[in-house]
Image (tube, rainbow, N blue to C red):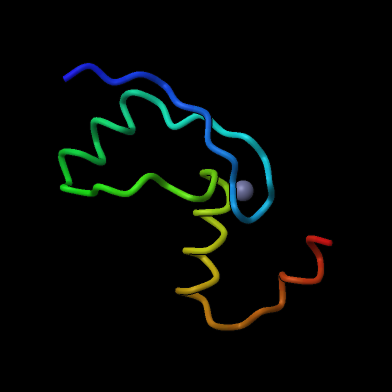
Length: 62
Ligand SMILES: [Zn+2]
């Protein structure tokens, strides 16, 4: 299967990001069928926020 880069709008920050061919390949190799809804930086932020339960950094981003 040939993958092509795809533009997706992040559901958090509304930035359009590219779901690259290699990411799609990775997703499929993991058995994921859904496309990512968030850009990489929001995914990272989310992950960090989840593993670190205090919310001190939230207001500094505004
Ligand atoms: Zn985002």
